[in-house]
Image (cartoon, rainbow, N blue to C red; front, side, top):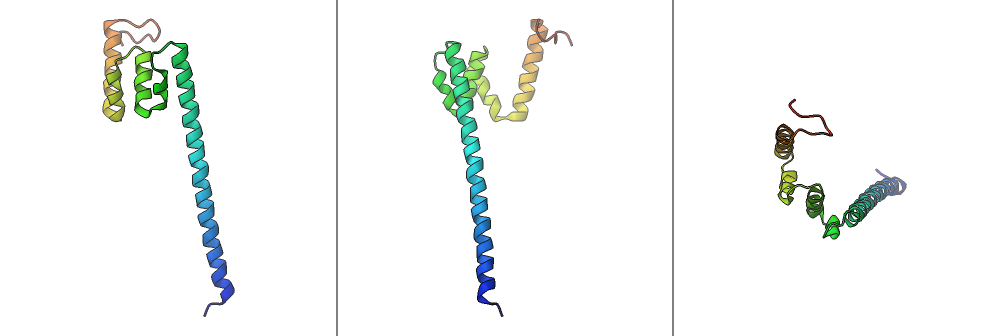
Length: 113
């Protein structure tokens, strides 16, 4: 037979754990949101300084990758390789290696390796 005090204690622990879990989730969400805002502001500022035509694309999740690639001189369609990480990495690596064979790099010394 349980007493009234024991039931209240168990409910208090469950409530405390629920509150702690929700508090941690809110904290993690705020950290993720703050990181996204910082990231978007940084890329938007960089786009403005480089006179990119649409720096507001830094706020749109996959469009910001397209913006980065265009600012780096790549075609915007390379953003689709981000959707397929393993295939995208292998294609990107192959492209860079072929580019180094065609035009020797002066900054990375990867030519003819």
